Amino acid sequence: MPFQVATYNAGLAVGVLPYATERVPRVVEALAALDVDLLFVQEFWLDAHWDLLRRALEPRLPHALRPEPARPAAHAACSASEVRPLVACAEAKCSGLTDEALARCVVQSCATPALALPTPCLNCIASRPVGTIHEIVDRCVGEPSAASQAPPAGRSSRYGGLIAYGGSFGTGLLARAPLADRDILVFESTVNARGALYARVAAPEIGDLHVFAAHLSPGGAEQPPQLDRLLAWVDDKAGRSPALLLGDLNTTPGSSLFRRLESAGFRDADVPDRRGTFSHDGLGTGDVGDADWRLDHVLLRGLDAALRADRILDEPVTISAAGRPIRTTLSDHFGVLATVERR
Image (cartoon, rainbow, N blue to C red; front, side, top):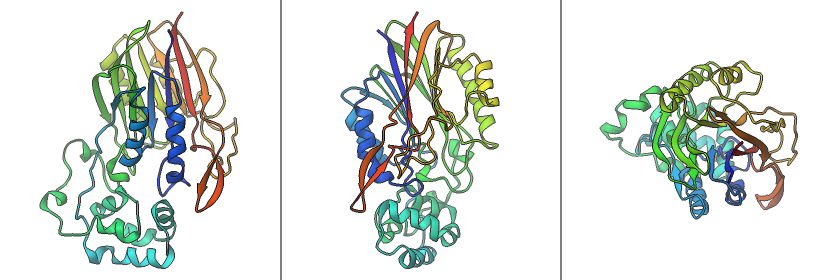
């Protein structure tokens, strides 16, 4: 029996990507319809969105791993006087808006007062951008405790400045079989918490498979050291045993980083689906192209098995936003479905 895995970046970045809130039900519905043994999702930044996915997939994929936030937002991190300029700007320029529409408007029109806030205050506000401007800031206003003002310790000290969505990694691994020896690797990153997940899975007719699921930063100086740490972690965890690496690696075949993966022993599908998995224009238009970057991958090493990969979740859908129908792709990424089968 072949072992089927999928990776999908859902693009549920509220306040950044369009129609995130409106797309959630269709994204969850599409993922629940997949017949896979293992699923890795990215950009489920909000706990509420992750909870919807877990409930929908639990009958089929009952085992899950989701990392705790790298830097949980401190409650009562803002004073009323600190948030007053932001509230005034939002009332003037984003009147009547709530939820995602409000978050996007604030990002576009009120960046100056937002960025003037103390970092703990801004992190708190950005952790749950749901509701009216008053509902959002009221969750964060009060007398801060000494603990909330203390510098973060442990792994969260890897971060400086703003970390969006309350330090959420946005990732989750869901499986039909138990996830053994679970672990999490935290990368150095800014703006969004980044990391990788690990679990050992008993795959039918294959045996133990070391699974590594990663969401790397999108290029720039952060990405090469993230990959170096990831590959060292793979060597430490799996050694020469069969290993599977999947996720939005934010690099394309032929790039220096992808060649680094190949040098470390990872291989692409036997006959890869060469269509792009990132869509510049699909959100809000429904346009599906094939020529964009192939950023999402399922790679294998240390196992003599057939590996087939196909692009999935690339059909346009119609959602309702602000009372009107919108034709859109489910995300700014498409998924990858891979089948691993012993030769």
